[in-house]
Image (tube, rainbow, N blue to C red):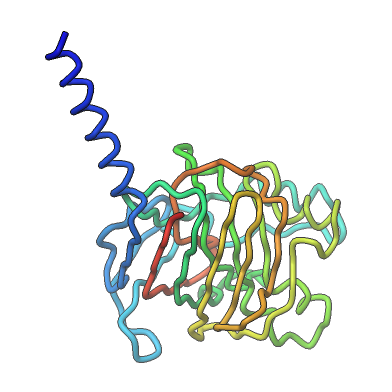
Length: 247
């Protein structure tokens, strides 16, 4: 019995140590793909805007461009969403529920991308093993200074895939999960995301006040999962200086 009790204590200690390690702050310079697991993505180490960075693009066989949606039509948007792939670079060995995520990122439409391409780029969190269930904040950099107020209003976005994509949230609760922020494509943007249970905040370019507030994170108060760099298939995305502080 003492031996069994001792073995159980050792096992419990090891599990506690593993959990503690997963909860430690994680910093990745992102000068290459070290520490990342690529999903529907290809990575290359580059210099972008004078800074060492990681470039992420969709593989040639993936959905390189968003499919056209019929104007004002739910069917068209739903059809495009059904054909979309999830493009992720997941941080390995990290279990995240609440905490802070900071990164510098940039997005621009790929050469030859369709007219609806916006340079979609962001961060997914609480990513599940299926790689398609997650919460996400992302940006549409080409909307930031568009000569159309409605497009500007859709610059920053919260989604929760697969049940709460952008077009369903926009249809059911217009403007609640989107916001304007002054950004540009192919320029470095500092992003900070804070998550506390069901509440999440997106801060852009070191602003004191959040750009977007979500008080009902769709994954719930206690969900947990991976953190991933996120981009859409029509985007050339760049990332650097990722820091994750779980709580």
